Image (cartoon, rainbow, N blue to C red; front, side, top):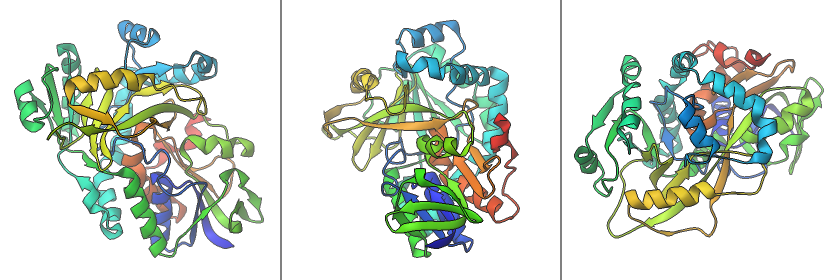
Length: 413
């Protein structure tokens, strides 16, 4: 089978890339070992995080570092066995989390974030997926005055970029979300983000839209990618597929394909867990709620109330250790009337991340016809459609909607 482009990875990023290429007239085959949206794109908190100009940074204060080291921060966990290999990456992550570097990050990521809601809408409308999305932003809660004061430091830059953070008292927050309990000291309503009630289903709807344009989705092993003639070949359940261009959008599995090709990039993973719960009585949520110092998010989903944990630093394929879920579930039950668990086992996924917290979007160094859309860390669902548009414009030689240079893989040379 021949095509113009092979896209490897059927998460929100890969599906968005494939869809944007098909919209521009390319014949595209989307390859994955599983169906669209069944891996990392299924398990996130469902946010289109328009307001995330500040990253999930590595702590710099001594007290915060001690809390992480002693596993007293419920938002972070680690495996001792993984630390030797992760240490160089974590050191670069720590350096990129310095205040001046964070401001550079904000200026860069805003170029993508400013387009995220619009780009989702451009796909969701024709895909018949608008009913999954809701406005209303998300609510961040703070258990201490110090935490709330730290959040206030973000307001000036946020407003410079046209965002609308609104500080709320406890009573005002309870008026916004009446089912919460007053175990916090203050809150901030970030009004600009949207959220989705089923991010996996959104990805599947975009994939169906891609198929309606003539795109093909086939089961295959991305690790079989190799040079073939003037382009690339991959082996699938429907035989070998050949194309002039190939796109790696494999999230946490990207280096399984890239390393054998000699492409060296500092990609690591941040693992995370979720569980769905029934809400007790008539309790409910209208939007995602982040307990900042509790280290978790609770989100209303079609499957129930989804509790999503923070970060676990571990080897990608190491056995699950959902200790954060056990801790944060207790905290969440104090905040919101969660009922019983709705699944026998926690879901676990991996957020692919570079140490500077920015994705790679563009050509693979030294590999003609190979393109990358990887490393979106906590913003994969948010950035999928704008990544698809930007990469498709680059691949087709069109003027890109924003400067792609800050997202080039060559920044790690």
